[in-house]
Image 1 (spheres, rainbow, N blue to C red):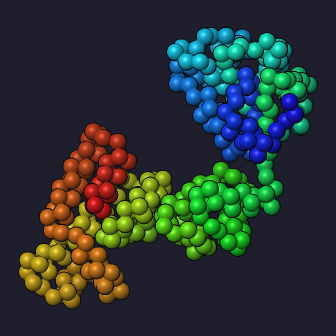
Image 2 (image 1 turned 90 degrees about the horizontal axis):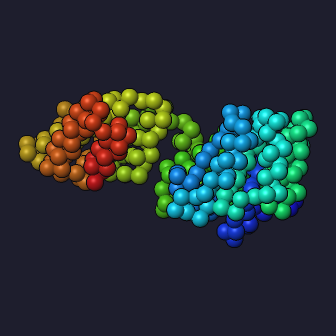
Image 3 (image 1 turned 90 degrees about the vertical axis):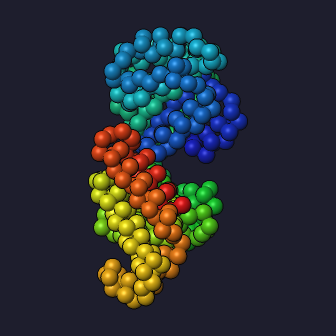
Length: 339
């Protein structure tokens, strides 16, 4: 079968027909990864029936033995061989021979990370050629996209997520990330999470906000989101802080500080009947932020704020003693604060 383009492979895989051998070759890591995930989803085996080999580290016989092993409580076994572009010359012939004598209960996936047309080792070129012309193998070219193709890719990816994006915003995303699809998809995921489900149009300002965050700005934004009970955005910023390497204890401290400020403000207003201006002065709340702070404060109760502070203390102890996963503890804390 001739080597397929990504679009043709996607159509083929949607039929859920499983072939004995797949070869994915090309320089676009994103497509190599998504093709592999598509095969894993269709074959659908557990870890007992899935093995991963690195061509440089094993012999062809190791791979063949895995292919000939019967599946355990499953119809298929999935054998993945990465780094076929570095396969030993002595292993080419045995693997080529397998194409003529496949095992029906196994699916073999070969990942060749590079442009097969530039392969200089004759034997490796022979393996690629044998795969492309074998009736038992589906071969897919995962080449890098040209800039014009990347523009269409960006538009389609936003479309899949039910978002629209202008041509100028697409160009800005290209300028920010180049044509690396993995980097682009990561940015698309982040900006879609940032704007939420309700807003359908992505603009250049959204991209600026996503790329322009610093740790300091994120810490402030996290506190603001907790005050306004914007859970989705708060979790997004929390994840951003963790990726940036911010210390979990510092994040928890910022959350606790925000909760204490709101608790003090509620107490002054409701228990001591202080006027808003005096509360703002006592808590050193800048006049620029005062209106938003006191408006958001109405969403919280003294009882709930005290409960959240108690949970923050429990989270602090759990994190410092290693009793729970740090990310999980912080997520629970943010969810509790925004509830």
